[in-house]
Length: 301
Image (tube, rainbow, N blue to C red; front, side):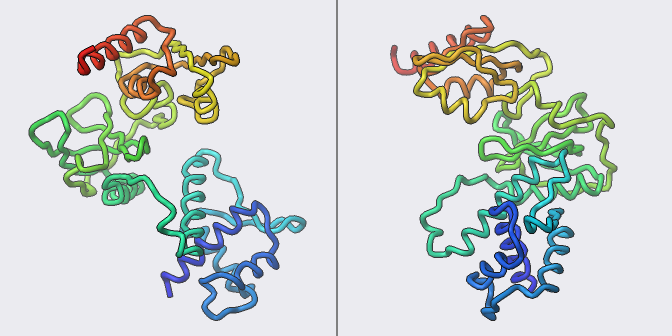
């Protein structure tokens, strides 16, 4: 029964999120056709409906409110947690669609997020409990694994992998740890979590593309030229929050950024091949050119 109720909560969140505003009578019409409606009731009982609303608030932190003229809607009260909340809503809504259309499962394909499910809950619970974590980690660049105490600052999803920004007790600066096969083990520690009082995750990563930060690399004005055939992709899915369109012509567009051009950003630029050219700064343009030359050498060019 608990599992069925959970599915009902997901269904109700998905319905309201999809419609924006929806009246109770319209919810009832959809409920009458739902596969979760085992008794084939013509409506979702009023008391049950409001119990579900309260449970959704308790379990997911999602507040379903009522506008007398427009109907029920999902309140947007948590401005600071907007991105997480939107991700949760989209995930639950998609789960609801899949549950309602079981025969379509083999026609909806997903990108795998390696091993993250195993460690995400440990990190989230530790941050909630204000505790450090004991981890054993095997970097791709080291032959031996290492075990140590780390203080998790935040989590970030980047290119199908979850990363934990954390500070180990023997380092001066926090670093990122991938929650994939590199993470051998992780348990919550009895050690109290230590996070700088003024730490802000968005601000910490604001000068970077991706998850890897380089303390010695300062933000710079990066300008790229993109052929028209690819420009719309970058316009509609920004590479960085600072992205600005400097110039737009039928042949190309020029974009400007304010960030530190680290390896993550270099790899992103190179992934667009001949359609993207770095115009500035000169040192980053040189790095890109050297990387292209090394690639050409691999092919005997």
